[in-house]
Length: 127
Image: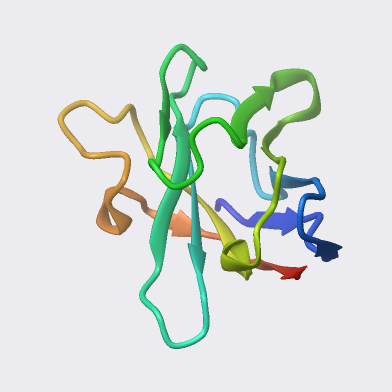
């Protein structure tokens, strides 16, 4: 059974950087598409970035393009979200999500395109 675990969240000043990690303690994540989402207090969960199962396709929200990068390391059985030039509005709990099978016609930016989720890691960006 897939058990995603996020880590790397922290308190950081505006303009700083963080790298979040997503691993699967239940099985390998290497063959699964993975998405990153975030949820700020009082707001809906929103898409951040996603990567296809083999890493050939990358998807990013307009709000993070040029600042965030998603990549995977199969040797580490992990998917990462590198966040640069952080802004206070990036403050949120960040979640990774996986799905069984390739995206196909599913939209990587939709919450319902994913089958399992981690518990989240908190990122706070101070101004």
